[in-house]
Length: 234
Length: 247
Image (tube, rainbow over all chains, first blue to last red):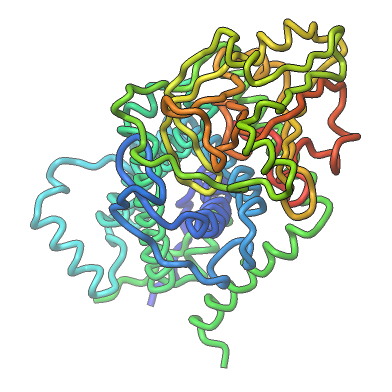
């Protein structure tokens, strides 16, 4: 049996961004649940309040899920608005760094043939068999992984940030076009919540797969950059 | 036995409980203040002084403009004002001004008024669009001749919340803003009690708790520290809401 060979898999920019974002997302989601509890109804359009018809009414999120545990909207906003620019500016820095160090171009480029049904089906079967890497290209992300990361980095996180900015009455005066893009303040808020839920789903899936892939090796590689290539399962 | 699952759930619990512990420390308080200052400065950098909050068409108004906070100030004073249709209500403008003013509702209604159909965003998350009408604050400040030493305008209100008189404050950027008005009408009707009769502040680039209701005095000051608990508003004093509510 060959000893697992360590390879350098994650660049510094990736690792820094990953942990800053992980912390930010946890704080933003937790404090976001408190903010949701303050008015657990979502509307479409320019406005929405108690006498209007929500398209969705949310459950009351229990204290064990929220930041802070005991309902305190002012404190939840403090957490939320402290970490929101952290998320936004670190994403921006990471995107610039990852274009310059070619991480995006080399590791996250999605090719057309990879979007075909047979390619997706094959990756799904590999996942069911708990095979997460290609022995010929061990460092490369698998297809589901790559697609998930691309959606998170280029769609979900930017949407969170832009809809979040659109919820600020001060920024509505600075960038009125942002409200138009989303179809109004109530719509921006709905999209903000829906995207957050999708990010929450990603988080659950991400953690599950990290655990299934061997958490010590995976987490160590995101800390030091070095990853031991798992033995190929026959 | 420590299973992976119990570690994860335990870890998540520790993280959330940890946030509660961290939030109680002085360092956290300073970080939150720094966060607020950063957001305020960044927003002010990105926003021109006269950039307007969105204004809407009449048909875009909320069918029902809900009320929040105090629905009616308690006490016989306000009731007798209400009974006499605010004939004896006076708006005092004092503090760091050269000419303190005392204005009746008749005088305020006779002043040139700005009409604006704007969106009210509550910090809770709901929004309502309504048509407000009233004189610009800058008009009143010019009439009273604001001193150069004045840095904030404090709005004193007739209602009492949790044992303290409601008050709010804004700086000169928002005080001079074209959409900052003392509204006496909502949706083509004289302002109702629940929405702040007879006089309601509109600060259209900030959240709803800044829009003081039942205003009877505007005080120009150099510092917010001596007023209330010094944080610039009732909700800021008692619950820690941010003074700059542009976010």
